[in-house]
Length: 149
Image: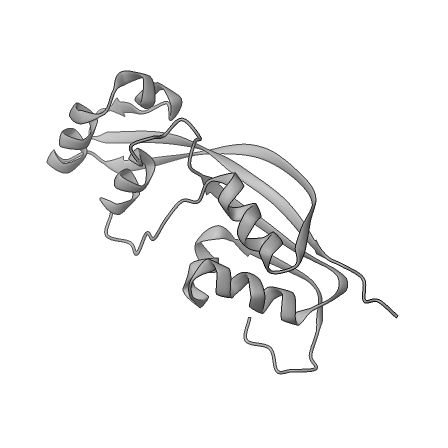
């Protein structure tokens, strides 16, 4: 990701979790813009927060696992940050991913305080000693504009 000036890339593929290891997302978007060739592509696959998640449940859930979880962005926010950096949405599609976690008292407490309708949005279920959550994954391709001659 840290490319010397003058070294450009035609495309960059990233998992969303990788993005935040390079700093705040708005800075990362600008770095990506800087190292992409004109018409270059940046492809990102990242689980996203559901627009109906008004209590930030998905980030609370993610934070319970001590693995460095930072944030699930919503689609609109992710697009806004990359567009401000000069990249435009080329194409996008959605998929899903289900994460199992070891069920413990922290998950139990979070699930108890969360409305059932929101648990249904994320298809949260407990199976034995595991709690599962299903997230929508945004697979999005941003394109850097062509240079003006």
